Image (cartoon, helix red, strand yellow):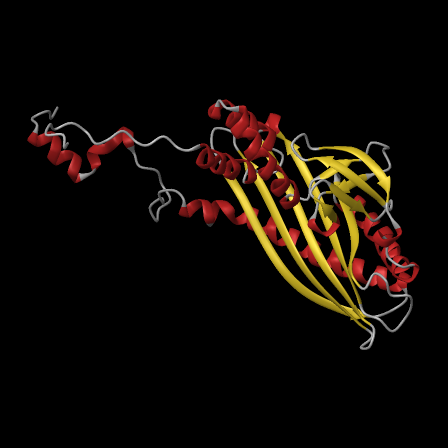
Length: 310
């Protein structure tokens, strides 16, 4: 029966548990770097239902951890394992190529709970490992010099069983560096992923890189930076040592160049981007003289009309 009165519409329908879980999952998965535990605490409180929260968290945390290339210290303190699709064996187990170990992780708690030696079928051949480990050592030096809290890994994603010259193979280099400073209301992350294709028949190495920089500043506001760059380069197929040096120099060149371009942009922000976000000053670059508004005709007309002239 229709309501003949002039009241408001029907009450909004209550969200289903599935809808609540999907919304919670979105907020968790899209939390800025280093802030998912803070978001999780608030989401859990708002939901008021641990069962719904746990369903959302179980799906969102793995997505978030992989998207942010989370680095977790292994229990035996042999190093950090990166949570990335390139090392993912299953939902909770990740291969660390440097230590030849498989780490078991708790995504929600963001801790590594166990490690085991990698199986033979999970490891590359000695020929491929020579190229991989040499490149890893060279890149590790670069990362430690450039990023105070940087972690890197080199994964073989194609051709890992090649026993010698004559076969193509591909590496993926992952670099992740974070700067968490919640007490100063800011967090940041640097991520770069480099696909390195070794083409034996052409004696050629093709390099494709994707760099992503994120920053979040939230003191009395919410400002986020999400900058991305894709680049390509190449070098010749050389010995493991010479290839490692050449590839590392290329990575260094592109990342240094991009970082310099970001810094140059920051210098110009007040006169470019920020200017577009606020009301522009007149051409004279002078502020509105609130203490002496009588010089403007509109003010004189209003005071005259209202009879409040001195």
